[in-house]
Length: 388
Ligand SMILES: [Zn+2]
View 1 (cartoon, rainbow, N blue to C red):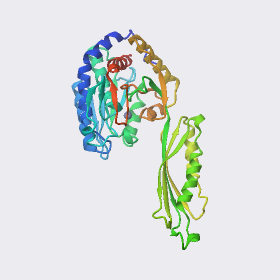
View 2 (cartoon, rainbow, N blue to C red):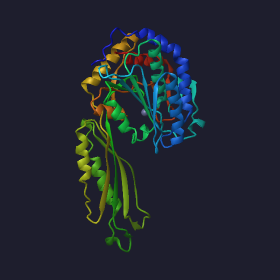
View 3 (cartoon, rainbow, N blue to C red):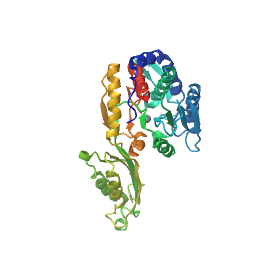
View 4 (cartoon, protein in one colour):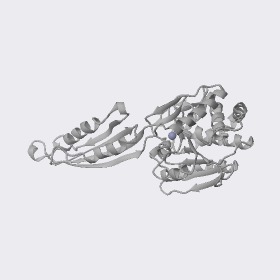
């Protein structure tokens, strides 16, 4: 790994710098949170992207807005020396500016500082992480520690599976030495493994008939769906980290009609890459038990798992050593939730995730970040980025 720090990185000075910058960092987090940015509202997300782009420009970043039609724009900002053929590859800082919260959430969930926390929709996931990245870059620039190019990539569609940003993320990641993902920490830990995710929709078409008059002529789509639900749920293998969960289902029209339609939506999580094609084959081979019914099966694995590779563990150990210099223990953990780190890890690029804020309640009413961890984590992020 070319990331070995040389000469030693002044972690204590970085921590002092992060503490000095904390008020400005909090102001930026507030500004970002107050621009509500649900993935589905392009104009709203773009306003948040514009604020981030202006901030990147003010820090001397080389800013490129990758315009999108259906989703918010994708912001790419480069800092530090331009990478030349012979020099070390850049580091990719990966984040998103969209949230799961609809417009107007601030009215009942205002952005506020209270009880040692900053509260608000999208604060933890992940506007604080974005502000931490900007602060870390600013500190490195001021301290003359920006030795290698940093690519900051912020997308607007992560919370809906990154349909348009995925190819951009993947294209940039392959040219980078490492990827740091600004998602929230898992408790206090960095994430070195994430499950992959898949989604399927199953539609059953039966034959409608009067439940009293023509029972024998009907083919009950709900009954067939029940069999399908039982079959796919049985593919769960907890030992291997494979889960299949039918999350939503529906069907039928009225009680005295044998239902001709039923459907279900299925969530699949895999810990091992090899389980992806295996589970896809299983869904593809589903057959109706009642031959008068027909099945339509659509879906697939959309995020490969982020497996705990050796190169990722090496990054984590480096982070742990720098954290120790700052006086705190840094654990690693794995999660069933996916992020854009899944894409970059699957390409074989060392990927460390959970490097954003520490807090609670992502996607929940009590979403908040813990202020006491803001400066130490920002210093740690800066320290990792300072490697030559
Ligand atoms: Zn997130």
